Length: 236
Image 1 (cartoon, rainbow, N blue to C red):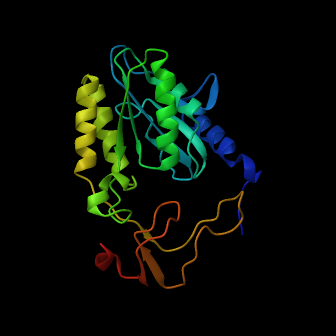
Image 2: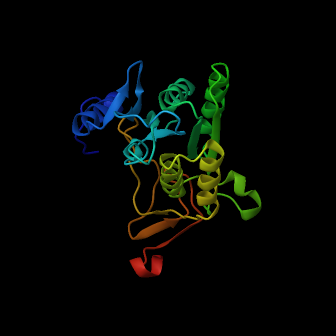
């Protein structure tokens, strides 16, 4: 595998250092290097917006930290959930006294750690509400929509939720419009080639040349069918 990195076990740390140098509008949490926030926080009394997830999906998740978008993001290892402590620290960093909306994708590790972080937040009297994106139609049937993964739909809930918070919607209002964005979004993945996680050193799935896998997850979760690659218009 050809690659340009330093230490395979420190790629996330190197990435964060580079992003922070290139983007002065972003800051690293003083007590937790795996939490990235806006350098200029939202005004007091505004709802905070938090998300988080594994690295390797750039520009998600930290690429959506900014004015009118996300206030704080919890950063995980490559394709791994952030810790509950990182989500909790992101909640505290984003809180401006009006509660925090945690808008994230439907993955087992994220679900578990967000719930743990919410318990930690409750002990500090922080009000946290969630919207969980589940727009990936290939990952579960309509009857089990709550089991579907979150993919591209996350971007829309961040934008809509962040815009609502910037317009000083209360927490109920932010949750309502972010949930509406998720409810009206559907997506499906198409995989052409695998990726190789540096610390693992081998492709995360196999696919023959000239073939594409429909319904594949963005971590390489199995799709629904492998077919010959189609032109872009036919694929759409």
